[in-house]
Length: 90
Image (tube, rainbow, N blue to C red; front, side):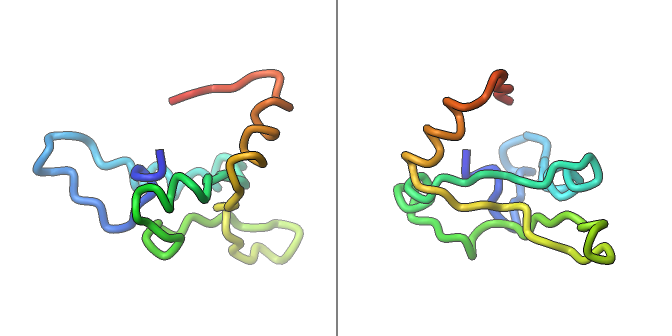
């Protein structure tokens, strides 16, 4: 969920691996879009500013860094999911 995208996470106290570096590396694997549901942020008292900056390098724009996070409302997220042939959840 949206908690996994929060900036400045310290997972040492709960004995879990911190995946922050993994999310930041997604652009290296040509992942350009990470959809974030606006309502999920609001329900948890979070804003876009609470999330880590995740970017990709746009090879068509002289490798300029561009944001990967795309904020959508719940109905947009439902439509995006409904339009997919395969959904991977992890």
